[in-house]
Amino acid sequence: MEAIKIFCPATIANVSCGFDVLGLCLDSVGDEMYFEKRAEKGVVIKEITGADLPLEVEKNVAGVAALALLEKLQPDFGIEITIHKKIKAGSGIGSSAASAAGAVYGINAICGYPLTNKELIYYAMQGEALASGAPHADNVAPALLGGFAFIRSYEPMDIIEIKAPSELYATVIHPQIELRTMDARSVLKKSVSLQTAIRQCGNLGGLMSGIFLSDYDLIGRSLQDEFVEPMRSLLIPNFDRLKQVALENGALGSGISGAGPSMFALCKGKENAQRVALAMREVVADADYANEIHVCAINPNGVKELR
Image 1: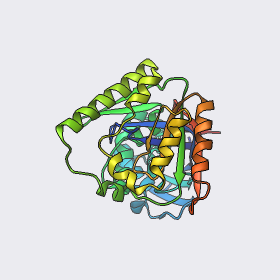
Image 2 (image 1 turned 45 degrees about the vertical axis):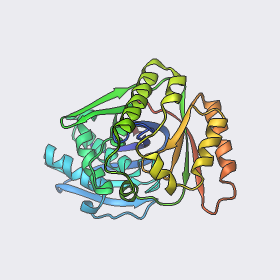
Image 3 (image 1 turned 90 degrees about the vertical axis):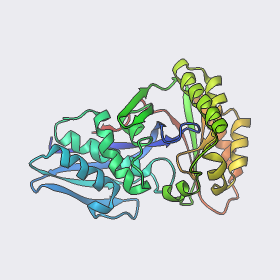
Image 4 (image 1 turned 60 degrees about the vertical axis):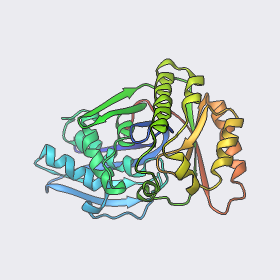
């Protein structure tokens, strides 16, 4: 293969009660990347559209992930990358993860698919570390695997792929204010009480069970965040009102997408998801900042090749 063009999907990390261990893949929002083989070894980022991001490989999330994978594969050729960013940086729906996951997928494809998508997660995480200060997988794993991805352990790496219930949709609202992942992490407590941890464990177990059983009511009851939401919600405009109208208009539950400022609502069926989107739009109609709202099915496959 001399060249390949791919779609790199947006993701929702944490999904309320799965801080740093759970994420899901969105179907219709994402970046596009183009990879071409070159004679000279190494990686070059030729062009980035849609965002003001560095072309220097060592300063770019995609570049760092690419270098990590090339160090492993040691091909006798190089790779040139073009990135078309359609997920805004700092949006909370996995902009950096899309770049990192896309970079390792594209290079692996050019090299003849020597690694599985699950094996690629480790190398994508190295790019995420540049963006957030920590090599977490709750965005890059669902971006590469599709559906839900549950990280049981980081050392050793143990990631479980979970198929989403067939009628599950996500409504995502992105208030276009930038909230860097590093800043969002800085407001979190370093420790929690035993009782708080017990409640969070119960919610995460309930959510996982609801997903496996396609029990939408159980999914809704379990979308409660004891760890992050109490602090991070203060950084998001209209958070309480947006969450309230989502529930009033049929959402199973609602919370912060990743580090924010985007919020998500999970819904049973596209009709409910669209109704929630309209209600959220009304809340922010007079806001002094722009907003984007997406209604997405859950992407079952992750990164995909474009023709």
